[in-house]
Image 1 (spheres, rainbow, N blue to C red):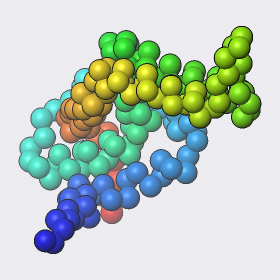
Image 2 (cartoon, rainbow, N blue to C red):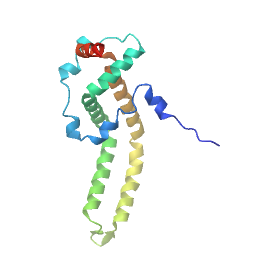
Image 3 (cartoon, one colour):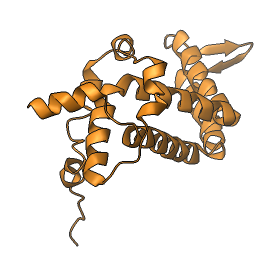
Length: 176
């Protein structure tokens, strides 16, 4: 039976997304948020209009994803924090696992001794994950991630497709 493969390049080339995320790996968090656009420019309701056709949507999305990339990263971060604050069990599981791994790491490979009981680091990691995996599955991380993808996609792509380019870029395109 042959394997079914999805041509990712064919899917991403339609919206010119193939090289869009290459720069994210090489930039630090501080430089990523250094070029945040002002809120007045990001929420400029005078430039909101319905695109005439799909090619205009493509043009607007391509321009706005590059121009407001830091603002969109901030929107994604805010939606991520909101999703964790509304799913407190998932937030507890994340803090529990990070805190447990930090605590076990502080032992530096030594055994944990509580009175006459002794636990090795492998026993502690096993106990941590025996507790964390059922709690993590009960916290519904998959639905939270899918909500985050959907909410950020609708918000970011909606903003990028309905916000018209600045007038300066229209004159720059005509000069070329």
